[in-house]
Length: 177
Image (cartoon, rainbow, N blue to C red; front, side, top):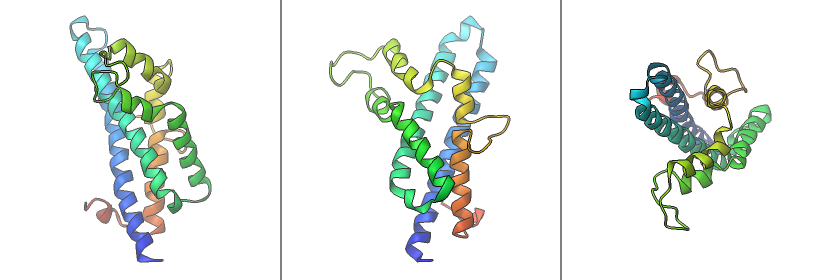
């Protein structure tokens, strides 16, 4: 195998490993906050902040995936490539990049120059999340077990594991950066 391809595979495994951690930690953190704070009126603002932080982080991860797959898609083939491509299309169709550019890290709407109110952000976020936050979080990472290709984390993990095996990249090398 050409060294250039293996080097690209090593780069890709580092990125994928990072994304897996981002998705898993964001889901686990949000579910933990929901469990601890849910139903306690005095913590309502804390739960809103946790939702905003974790969901923004998940959306950023989705957009990183879009960028990742655009650059590294040639490293994959077959069913895995098809699942990765479908995931990328799903993120695009849900308006991930548009949401990131408009809402994450901004307080003003770029077009109107008016404040982005939580209701505006939530309305835009609904296109990505859908009506059921719990189902969305389980689709990103199912704490009870990610089944490939049913969750985002499982597809990303499968892609990382495939590259590690295909290009003989030991776990130690994946964790070395």
